[in-house]
Length: 245
Length: 245
Image (cartoon, rainbow over all chains, first blue to last red; front, top):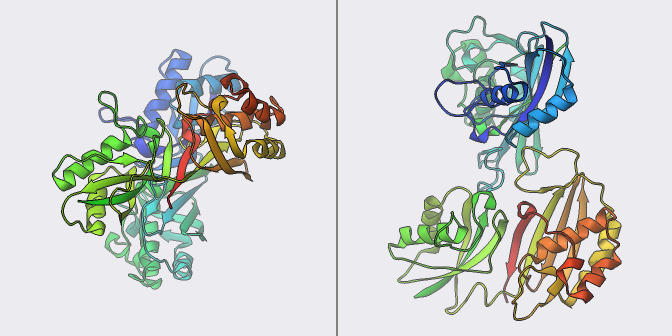
């Protein structure tokens, strides 16, 4: 038995998120497991670095998988990609040490969120950014990001009630204007359920002046969902990278 | 009765091209006529500036339509967009003089073709460019474009046998490298069936060195399809603009 780390790119637009489901719709994990089962001839399960919501994309999701026998990783990856639909690609397959687990061993994650601030939604990018046609005060958003960076209790920035711990560390938040697009990058130890999307909604409300930058700090202190901003839509979000030691 | 000119943007990925069809699949014209019929309450037909193939996109297709009674174009356009799927948008609706016809009055057209030369296909742009993972000699392609610009008989650059005339004028072909993307823009009086895609296939074969730039001139003179290059896939092609007097 050997363990492999897969790095996966996907267009999440037509999937019900990462996690395999018994009943409803197609999921990325489900599609990958089916393809691996098809290539190996044995029912195989994989462990992702974490779930992504329905409609969220990935440029570098990771998963671990244990395969029996000797496998040529290059050939296996190529067979796997042939068995997968074109909107899910395995871009790397690496032999790692036994016991490696994509979620348990993850040390950090990087996400990107794209906002299109043009007046009208764009037909060609509508599934890959959030159309939010308002002028955004980027310096105000950057000021708010300053309060959010660091180790904090993010209880007010999740929609899940029963987390063991809501303390996380955000190493950096980069907010960039690219013509009429805003790109927000989040780099941290890990993120709670909906956290990146709520952080983005909060920053957007600050960008339009509905909230002051200081209210990001207040929302942290309050630890209550109602102080943070709205849940930004899934389609603007990309899981960019997962880091290991 | 008043005549209007519509300017339309569409993602052609899931459509069977522009032209309304009785039996198979959804078409852009069909979808637009249905939406107009829904808004006006009367069965309405439109005339496009020309057909686009299945999978071809548009940033500025045009169509003419005659409507009875007084119509507030801003309101009508907004109702029309509400009735259309998100991948087809009417971006402008202008009152024009009676008798205007989007195809018969067109004086010129501009198309764009996008080629992605990276090693691996990109999950997020796969429907909007042609993945052609070869290094392209852009100066050679530009030299060939020089032979193609002008008024010529393009009989060798179409897949339709029974055109009344195969003489067309290409005003300009611009070939630009943008990182690992190649953008080719075609501006001319009009283009024959498949002509832009065959021009692109020819330029790509010249870019990889399979053909010499002079062979573009030979293909023109020969007037025979077999001398020109392959039919580049629809997905890289965008109808960008249609010009009128």
